[in-house]
Image (cartoon, rainbow, N blue to C red; front, side, top):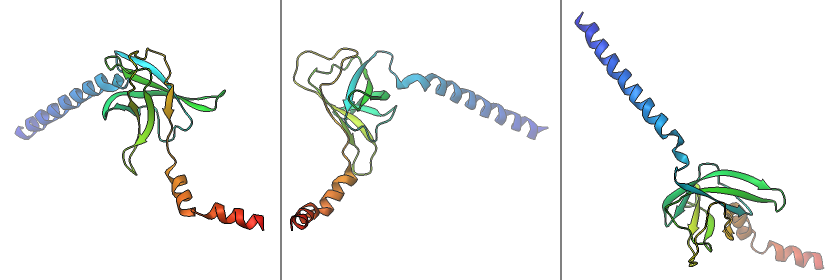
Length: 157
């Protein structure tokens, strides 16, 4: 009888912990999109490594997340919607860059603030952006080095 009581108490404790965890998870699930935030638009020639939920950082501090990525069929650029905290003013001449945490790190969008006194408003687009860098392409060009010169010299003969 004593063993059953102990098992019942442990079972109730586990059940309470599971319920508490469920309440915590359900309260944090919608937190990817901040309540007091604005949507800004950035168009990139290449948005490689960026996905919905990617961090947006200013001076290394997370200030928002990417909420949407689509293709602009007129310019063939990636249109990225950035959900940025409203309490962080972003000057109009700021630059949005896709960078990575080291050589093998994940990509994020870094905002480099400009010097303009006017701040960006909801729905406004970044005038200056820099897309992701194709590291394998750069390594291929570096490793190939003079291959273009050799092929040009050979074709001239």
